[in-house]
Length: 338
Image (cartoon, rainbow, N blue to C red; front, side, top):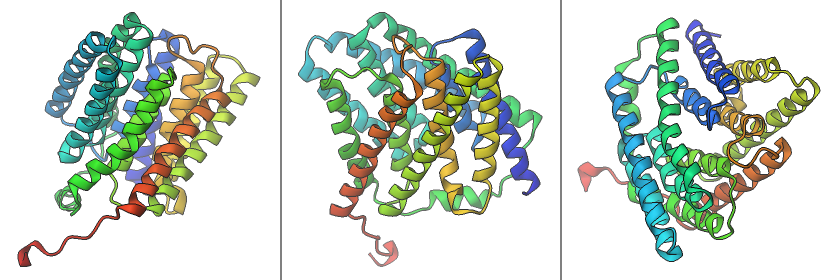
């Protein structure tokens, strides 16, 4: 393994385990979200610039408060409430595909999905979440910046970012595609009265990952299914080990081991490498949510969480494949000749 890849694995393992461990010791709300944010920050090749992070933090605060206010006002009117949820999802995709990126898009979807769902359950808990999502983001940003400072990344080639941004795709089709996938799931989730908050967080993350990908149809679906199966299997193993050795050190060591193993897998050249990043976020959500739950989900065990997340993943991924089959993305002609 190259030195830079090894450093990237160290940054990921130390940063994510640090946030995960503090969440267990201090018991702050939705610490799992902070660990996932940290993993997303540390999977980037370089640290997020301070100005960009400040904008993201301010955006998250404003978004959560607006979502809470709108949800509280329109909660007594189910039809209007659901229409607003659908509009929020679509606006999240528009903003993400227009250049905001995956993490801002995830935060936007959290505001469109998680806050409204919790307002219906308990406005007091929803208000707690309004404060703690930005605080989790702030702490994740601080830890990731610290990791990049302690273990510096190699300078990036300026042409790499330009090549990625120059990718040609139909933005409108991508927005409609993921809206057709995510909006029906969200509406069914709300109408059924479901309250598995971390499943909505998982769907927000998965939807943004799919939205950021080019239309590769079944190949992407296979990769995402592989990632989630890998993450689900690792989550069950971690949970069972935790049952055998129920001490605070066990989940900390398991988190560190998972980060090192999946981080190294992501830097390898084998076919499963592309699934490692998504598998890690699945482990953090499923296993972390099972041992440090939020709200009234204290009795939810790992196998139940796996089934919840697996059902959501299957719906989103299968719907994604169906939309791509009936509406394939066409390659654009050379704009010079247009």
